[in-house]
Length: 142
Length: 142
DNA sequence: TCGCAAATGATAATGGTTATCTATTAGAAA
DNA sequence: TTTCTAATAGATAACCATTATCATTTGCGA
Image (cartoon, rainbow over all chains, first blue to last red; front, side, top):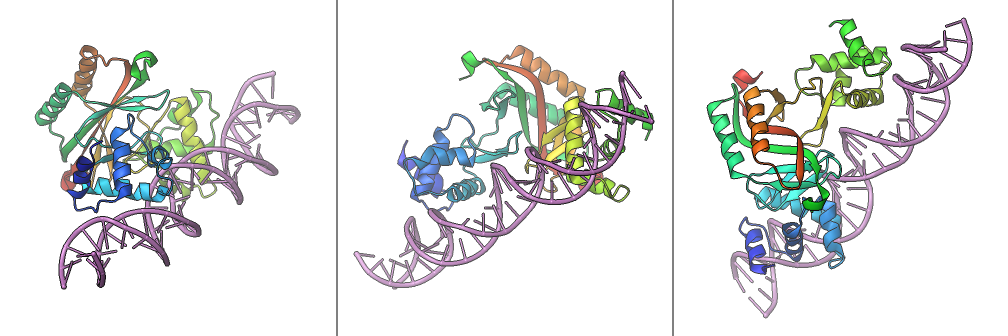
């Protein structure tokens, strides 16, 4: 992971660049799934035993405020974080509760066109998020 | 509200019919928004002061297990309940945090066709839920 | 009407998240 | 480089929606 890249990410929004922020951004950026604060904490604590869980929470929240990461609530009420800021949909496995990204420009186009041509009375749509619920086929999903 | 309708709803899935279940189903069925357990509790407690919050939680959960209502997690990590079991999308107001139903058969058709023609490798989709995030126009939305 | 499994009510426990408060530190200014 | 200060980190307690526990009550089939 490029230190300069992370430093720029953190600094660009006026946040001070600290070791903790470096490590936490890094862990999130490299995570396969959409980790909770606790999962990020577990990921970094071996190499950084002095970083506290509270700092992980606060740091992730700072990143969200700064717009360099996203967060969302999963079906179990856990806050999950995501280094990808672009709009995207999710796959949710109802068995394993895993959550993966799903991006498809055709789908985005389809939805945008739909909402353009079918405006909702009394409501202005800024963002459309789709969750595909189902079951992963284990042999391929990992 | 028709007592027989509620009684059938509750009984059809093998649940015993109690006063509490009558009152709780009723409150949910007539709710405009998608209430939390606590909101349902507030709704019924004046007329039913002996019903406990724990019972509301347990009862709503029984209904979900029985398939006669739905539940979902909102963006703030609150569990919300919904008497409408048919698949439908939601409007989420980022200002007031209100959640409303949105049903559109064209949209459902569009999404089903999309997923038919664009199967996701390693994942079997059973349900598609869409959240339109934006802002309500107060004069119309209520 | 009886008997019992299911449901209720009261209460405590859980656990993810947030708040608080003191010590530390990044980064601007001198 | 040194100094200064607001921002940040760490430790800890508090919060609060939800769940678990358990004794009591009750719907409903026999």
